[in-house]
Length: 453
Image 1: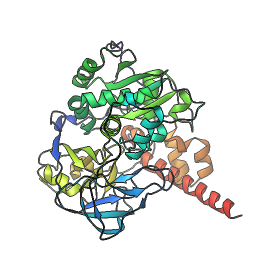
Image 2: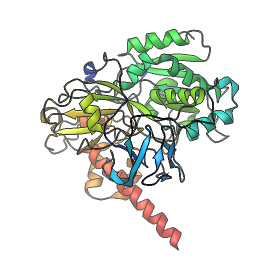
Image 3: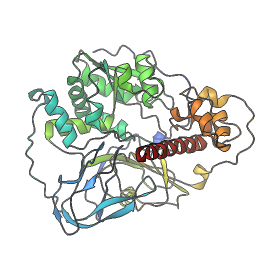
C-alpha cells in the first residue's frame, strides 16, 4: 500500500523533545556476540506475570533451545540459549534490582540443539490456533520493555474486534537504536512477522508507525510493503514518548484507550519491532526466543554499538564486546534514560526485555536539587496522559493514597516527561512511581486479607 502519510506527521497531545543521542549507534550495523565465555543466567521472571517454575536441576545436561522454565500462570516459557550443564538454581540479581530464582548454566560452547517436533513451514499452512501455539511455545513476550506474553495479546476476548495491528517502530527513547537497525537489516522478517500477526485478524490492517527522524527505515520497509493491500507506514512526528502504547494508538488511529483499559478495547494490537521478528522466527522457522538485539551506549563506552546476543549473557560481557569502559560510569541503566531501570552492577544477565545497556558519566546523569514548585503548569502540558503531576507529587508526599487514586495517578506511565520539563526540578516521576507501587501493594494486601476471610 502506498504511504499516504509521508507528508502528514501524526502525533499525540503532550510530550517532550529530549536530545535523542542516537548518533552514537544509529549507523552501527548489528554485530554478533554469540559466544559468551562466562556462565549463562536465566531468571525465571522475564515477563509480566508469575515467575516460571524451573524444570531442570543442578547437574542436568541441557541443549540449546531446551525449555528450562515453565509458566505457572500468566507467563511465557524460558529456553536455554546454549548447551551445557546446570551449575545451580538459586536467586540471582535481576535487572529490576531484586533477586530472582534463576537457572545458571555452564556454557560448553558446542551449542548442540534440541531436536524439535515442530518443523519450519509457511504460516499459510497453519491454522490460527497452530500459529498461536507456536508463538506460545516459543516463549515470546513484548520486547519493548513490558514483557506481556505475546500469545495472549494476539488472542483477545471474542467481543474485541481488532481493526488495527500496529507495529511500534518509533523507538523514541534517547540512545536506543536496536529496533532501528532491525528495521534496516532484517526487514523481511519484520514484514513477515507482521503478516503472520495480521493473518490472525482478517478484518484488520497493519500500520507501521515510524518517527520522521528515521527516513532510511521508512524507505526500506516501504519497499517491502508496496504491494501489500492491508499494510501502510504511518510517519510519526519525532517526539517522546511517541512509542508509548496509548500515545502510539492515538497518533495512528485517533482513538483513545480509556483509563484502566487495554488497546484491544479500541480495536488495536501493538507489537514491538523485535517481537515481530521473534514471531516470524517462531512460526516459520520453529525457533524459540533465545536471543535479542541490545544497544550499548553512553559516554563511558569505548565503542558504542548494537549487538545480537544470547539471552542469559552478562551485561559485563556485552559491554566488553563494545570495547569496555573508557571511564567509570556514574549510572548504569537497563533501557533508556527516560524510562530505564538504574542498576548497580554489570554482573546481571540480558533478559527478553533488555533493549539497551546505557553507561553514563556523572556529568550526563547528575540529578539536580529540587526547589519549590512554582505552579507553572509545564508538567501538565507535557504529560501525555493529561494528569496533574505537581498535584500528584504533593499527594504522595502527604501519603494521601486515596486522593492519588482519585486523580488517576495509577494511570501514570512513568515516562519522565514531567520531570524533564520542570524548572524546579521536582522529582515528579519518582513520586508518581512510588504512589503507583504503594497503591498496588495496598490492593494486593486487601485482596489477600479478603481471601482469608
